[in-house]
Picture (cartoon, rainbow, N blue to C red):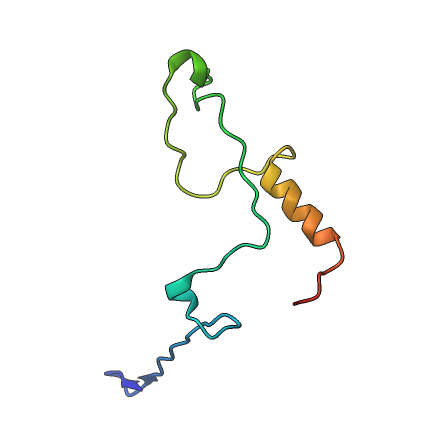
Length: 88
């Protein structure tokens, strides 16, 4: 508990997340059950063809806009609509 100047207090809690084997997720990470590669960009943001310029810009930070043709989105929707797999 951390007392504050106005008489209130702040309770700070910490969580540790582990996988089924008891290993820390922060240390080990999470291995995906389904791997889907995003489609490679063929045009730069200003409409120039990457093959013609030979230069591919770094992707903008943050989430990519969703497109109905996005292979990652399509795989996610397919997995969500399919029956759940039983754990091993």
